[in-house]
Image (cartoon, rainbow, N blue to C red):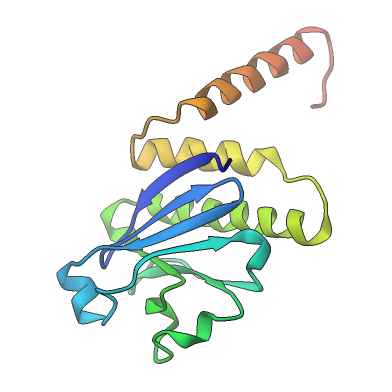
Length: 167
């Protein structure tokens, strides 16, 4: 069963639900999604194991985006990577923390993709940083993950209290 890590609202009707093994990009009908011809995209589930590449651009003068490239990703809106059905768009002007959150989102997903492709363990620090930033930008009930973070902090405290200097 997939575990929800966080949900992030973006721009142009986009939002992304990040799970441990996939992400779901949802496009709602908004003026922005109508203008970009994406109003009918609905929900797109992308499993990390199927991703062939990631395109990422931080927000600045234009919107920022994270696009997950799959074998079929070139079928939708070839005129712009920013508005493909496999793309989560966000506006850093909404909150200065959004670019930091997007950086962390990129790193977390890239790490998960590599762990599937190369059969290596995923790095927990990406997970913890993503949750920390997502909570700061958009409060959300993290349920099982909050307990995981509390347990990890407890173990770290016990480890360092025992006189260890390096984690």
